[in-house]
Length: 296
Image (cartoon, rainbow, N blue to C red; front, side, top):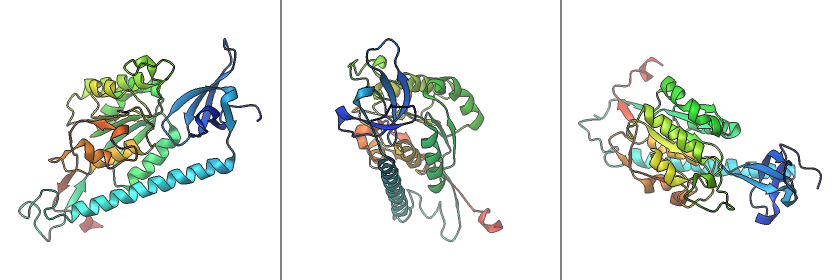
C-alpha cells in the first residue's frame, strides 16, 4: 500500500473493511503512530484510525459503493410514492370528507418547507435532488458541524421553514466509553447547540419540526435540547438519506394528523434503532380551488 493522502478512499482492517471512508486529516504530531480522521463515504459516520490499520480502496469498489447507495435511495423514493398513492386513495382522503373536499373541485398541495443544514456538501447535493423529486420544497446549506450553532438562527429567520434538518457526520468514540457524555461523541455537541439555538427562536415543537443528528449521535441529548426526531437511539449508523426521508414524511402529512414515531421508522432504512423522537403534527395543507393549474 502506498502512502495515505487526504482525499483517499480507505477502509479499516480491524473492522473487516465494512465501511468505505474518505481521509479528512492525518495527525502526526505527538503520536507514535500517525492517526487519520475519516468520514464515511456513504454513511453519516466520522471515525479515526491508526494509519497502519487502513487499506486503500480501488476505484472500482468506490464506484460500486456509489451505485449501491443510489439504488438504495431510489428504492426508498419509490416506496414513498407507493405510500402516498395508498394514502390518496384511502376511503376518506387523509381524514377529510366530501363536505371539505367536494368532488370535481381541484385543490393544491402546500407541503411543509425544509431548511437543511449539512456538514457534507456531497450529501447535501443528493438530498436537495431527492427533495425536489419528492415534491418537498427545500433550501439547503453546506455548513460544517462546528459552524451550525452560529449559523442556524440567522438562516431560520431568513427562510422561516416548517422543518429544520441539522445533520452531517458524527461518531461514538468507543475508547471514551460513556454514552451519556457529550465528550464521547465527535460532533453531537454542535448538533445539540444548534438545536438549542433554533429553539430560542421558535420554541414550539409543532410550529418548527427539528430533525437532528448523524451516525451514532447522542440521541437523548438532542431530544432534551428540543429536537422532534434525532439519531441514534441505539448508536447505530444511519443511511445518508434517512434525515430527508423523515422530513418528507412530516412535510407530506396533513397538519391535523399526528405522525407517530413508528410511522417515521417505517419510512427509513435504519428504523427505530437509528432515529427516534416524539409524536409530531404534519405540515401539509390543502388549498382550493386550484387556480394555478388553470393558468398553465
